[in-house]
Image 1 (tube, rainbow, N blue to C red):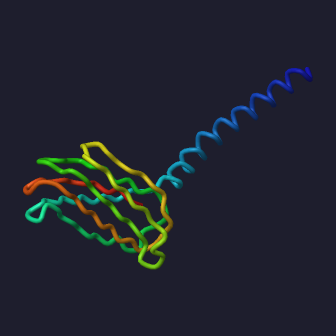
Image 2 (tube, rainbow, N blue to C red; image 1 turned 90 degrees about the vertical axis):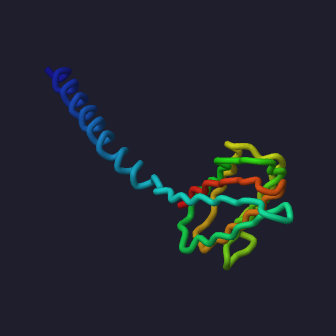
Length: 136
């Protein structure tokens, strides 16, 4: 008789743990998942064999940034990307890539702040490069 009670108690505990896990884990995952915003930047070299763009990202939360080259047309020889916090210029990163190709990307985790992105491309006139920036 005692074995039947013990088995029943263990079964109830196992069911309770399974239900709790099924309810809590999805809630935790959705709370931890950050909603990423995206922005596209297209640069075209019109003269002087380079082009640049500047974008501001205000009140960005801490999290992961991903910058991906989504389109290259013409002869783009190099790309230089600078991303830094207005208030803490040492918080940020720099990326230099020779002969950039579609799919090249960089991912970094940055603290919350107000960021400026500067992108420079170098190559032949009428060459175009498009970036997609995903940020928190």
